[in-house]
Image 1 (cartoon, rainbow, N blue to C red):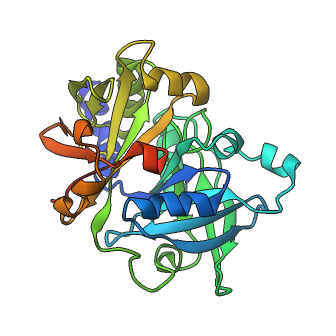
Image 2: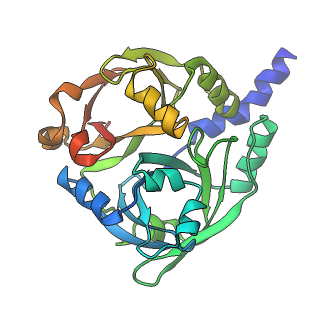
Length: 299
């Protein structure tokens, strides 16, 4: 039995090793304001177009590794009922900031089958898309993992039906080369050990490395080579606890890999520097940005 369990876990481990962030999503009510705030800390974005749901529109900052930061806002003339029915309605209407994240898949159907075999709830693939401002139509399929709101505790899965570079690089190249990509998704969780157990079930990662960050007000866990940091509130009064109470478990911050971190130190909060698992993390001015975005030196 012990040999059988070790064999059965192998495909899970291989999948985790190949896991790549497709994109991370920041939600708010007004896309133009979100873009202006991001620009105020030195990061430009480009408009990506309206989604086919007639509710949301997006702008993006794509990076050389293929990942991108998505700013998602409400379309100017979206119907109130349609907005209320959106899966991320609360995040959009309340300017929640970090909202969700997606993992790219080479074979969505196979990954859905793998997760089901691991005992993890996962939805059947569903088609979606958007049209770029230049008229280019983009199509993809997604699946939700876990029983929570899409892309919150676990990433949702995405596989393109049109060329992915058309989606990630609408200008034919990364929007910026100042950052290599998104390196960490920080997920606020109620109980660190419970959250770790669920991730180990889904992705077969080894036992985590843990630390405490009192400035961030959380107990942290790094999950092997997954681009995930789980963060449990230090106490019931912390900002992490308040965020979980309001939005549930899910992304509360993202971290980028900066090619030249010194270039952005002027935009960072001096008191917000810390070391996570041996890497120095700096945080952009949250008052300017309205949400938590960090950066570390690219490796």
